Image (cartoon, rainbow, N blue to C red):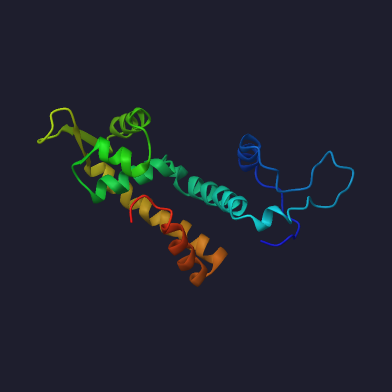
Length: 177
């Protein structure tokens, strides 16, 4: 990212930036100078640039899945359960890096929408096995098509080679190797 003047971010992103304590990406309206805010030092910090990329990715991803009323974490849950039928809530919690007490309301919501079902585990009576319903599989298929459109927009932003490299770099931070 260069020091070029950046367009103001949509309100939703600006609110997220304000909550995060980060500096806004556009000129300060209260500043007497109309020059853009310098980001020269921050643009040399990986953490700052990763956060800026995250804001773009999440905004686009949320807008992409909004019509299906899915948030990124819901998509992740449906994808993981779809690939691992019978997965326990504890295993899902671990893979997502979400405490079980935070995961349960998300599962409740997906279950109340008829997308997911919990059944008592055959091997551990204290545990539940997770499965997608037929409706959950159909919604996931629709979501996957939309997510590929999101990935294409990201690829357009960074190029095909850049996208491949980005995936390789980010995979080094993943929980599952």
